[in-house]
Image (cartoon, rainbow, N blue to C red; front, side, top):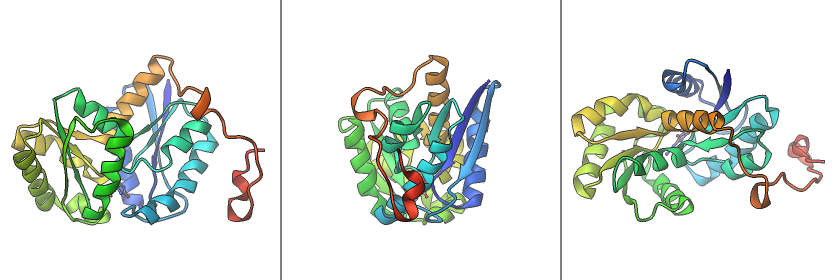
Length: 238
Ligand SMILES: NC(=O)NC1=NC(=O)NC1=O
């Protein structure tokens, strides 16, 4: 039995429900998926400020432990590197998972995200993960995160615009709330459309099945023990 914890870094219960359904729809028969929303922080993540304040709650879930692997289900991959230092199993971010998956399906991929202001973060992640050559463009549907599940038209238009203008082989959906549109958009646009929640779930399962977890040599070794004070005092690593 494999146990995965899929963490929604925002506090929107409906989105946590969608994320859990998406992960369970692709999980293997022997995998138990628990989906959890953030106990504190923003109701959606649409800015650097939102992202920064979502991280403590993500790390609190990782610190609880008890799973074979973890998925951080927000396209900014908030807290991914910090989570890898403390997790007792592999940690996969949905942006990283979607980008890796896209490169296995074509020469180029474009990212379609929510608000235009989140394009910068997606661009940073493309560089952080080394996909500069593979990524052919960034587009936004300009729909707020909490409305994206019901925003088929503007999201489809942004995907069609990306496929047309970038000539990309693959599309990557830049929000955990977009998962429900994958198959439909892929059929209509005749291009593979990758959802990060599904991709991250399967990648996490694969690493666990291979008996692999984050290296604890060097950069992702456990953090040096130290005291934490104020509202973060429970995060102390002593
Ligand atoms: N591009 C995005 O805005 N992504 C996201 N914001 C969230 O709150 N969850 C996401 O996946």
